[in-house]
Image 1 (cartoon, helix red, strand yellow):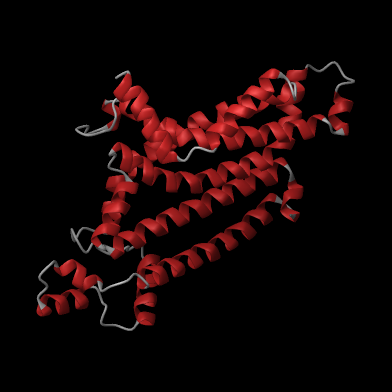
Image 2 (spheres, one colour; image 1 turned 60 degrees about the horizontal axis):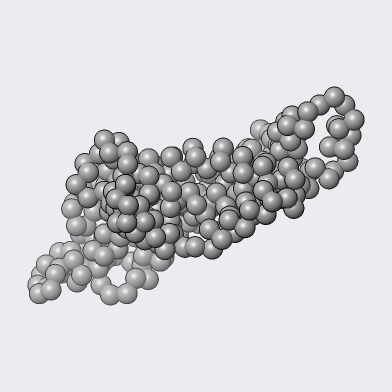
Length: 314
């Protein structure tokens, strides 16, 4: 199978996955308890205002018609308008996108080289003191949930030593205060770093015991070149897939991190939308998260296919 053929197949599957995600999002938001119009009407709802809200939210139409109308709007790039602010949902997402992209981007930039370096270092001498220390520390840190590590790091570096800010309150632009990003990025980095580095280690140890690596050692090739140029590409697919799954984790972890560190990103926007029952914003955010997850997994599958075409048969 050629790369182009595999790409077409994965894109077709990705489109079907996105449609399935959109359908699931619509059904789940429809299943939310209570009446969204009553919630938006306030503590002393006026029946006439409730009726107007229901008409504006198209709640007076059958579920099937609203679903089809919503899908058609999505195809036109229209995510609807916020029920609270009356702003287009796309504008609301763009407003919160920059802080979230900054956190996720910094996390990935640090994650890939650090995880590869730790994995290669631990796999050089399996069972050595270095390997046991790296494996023990990564396993221990991986068992700590995000909110616990966030609170712990705030207590140590912000409250005890006072070297880093505890949150982003009063900061208009995160890039103006880089110190604000240190603790959030560290919290987002810990668990994926542990999982990816352990997968790299396991893959390199398996590759190191293979026949072709033993054959390579008969030639005047350094161990470093064997590890990085020959063994690592073979051990790469599981780590690449784990990096793709890390995207799913980041999308969930960023909600916790932004709430703890008071960062006005997409996670905070989602929490506020759920609290105010702003269904169009909830749907838009969930669809955005789902689409990003599907696209990242397609990219990971293409990289794995390039490293090892046999993965297409799995």
